Amino acid sequence: MKVKLVRSLQAMLPATRWCSGSIFIQGLGSMALMLSGEWLLAADIVGPALPLPEPSAPMVADAPEVVRVASLAAPAEPSSEGQPEAAEMQSSPTMAAIQGIPEDEAAFKSLLTPGQLTGWRIHEGRVNAWTSEGQTVRSTGGGAGWLLTDQVYSDFILRFEYLLPAGGNSGVAIRCSNEGNPAFSGMEIQLLDDEAPKYAGLSGAQYTGSIYYRAAPHTKAPLNAAGEWNACEIRCVGTQVDVLINGTLVNSVSLRTLPDEKTAETTAEDQIDRPISLEDRPPLGQIGLQSHVSGVEFRNLMLRDLSEKRPSGLTLVTLQPGTGDVAAEGDTVALHYVGQLVDGTLFTNTYGTGDPIVVPLKDVIPGWQEGISGMKVGERRKLIVPPELGYGKDGVANLIPPNATLIFEVELCRVER
Image (cartoon, rainbow, N blue to C red; front, side, top):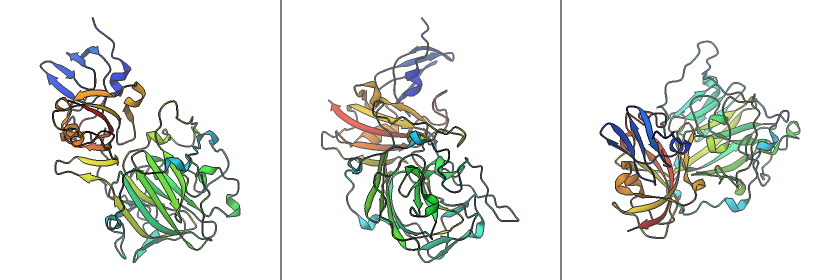
């Protein structure tokens, strides 16, 4: 009897095997069968995602020399009018700890080449609006737009100093796209002269340390006077984002929570043209520096990349260490995991399904075989799986695009031998 494809199949999918005349999806507790393009059987399954395109050269207009890219609508300056008040997510300092990351000052590398903007591109701004001197980069006047890294980052610790004049307004985008408004294609950490009279009465998610328009800081930022340097540290690890201003933790946000814990969110539908809930933001992307008409200076931008790229092309990040049994090739393991496309689309989340999914490692995609082997029980890893270690040039119809990079956060619950 033909069975209608269940919704959970489109939400979950970890390992594919091909059988004559059919597709047999096995592992993580279920299977599905397709013959002659028709789904004949489907049961609960679980699964995979899509690569950011390589940076392309910006288009430069001849006259005012402006690099233009289609943008999501966003106010040039913060305004207290028309705010989606319910969209603000408050979070407590107890969410802040990023576990298992040892101190390693030598691992921080400068994002700036002295006196040059090598490795950066102008986005929606005047080409000559940004200048570099030593380890300082600055913008002057209006129309500077954004300065984006060429390189893409997923998990990192970013440290820098910034200087705003009186009434100044800026921000740093993380995991943003090279298309659209970085404040919403990724996330913007707001930097503002909070004490300026013109900013009185803003919503909490518009002050320094907020994830702009989404998550208000739980502690007021201890800012130095306008015209003086402030220090900022952004920790972006898995689904956790922490913001420190002058050494004080001012915001700690979990981008994804279990369904019964998730904060209700509303959006101003005319404000942007895509969902802006934090769990729908991309899991990797560029870093961006923002300028408004007031101008801004940044210096000593130092980044510690927490990802490890294997010779195979697999990239992994340890999000939380484990202390239990070690998974080895050939083991059967019990897992919870979440999968996203690079554009932020969440296509699988087993945490809402109850018990972990049990699967033999021999039956999963090569990226999982390599990435899960060596994990300890209790450990959480992010796996960024290139197409050749995932579903390749064919992908999976209506679920995984061709040549898709798969992005998972995997938690090893137990090893069964």
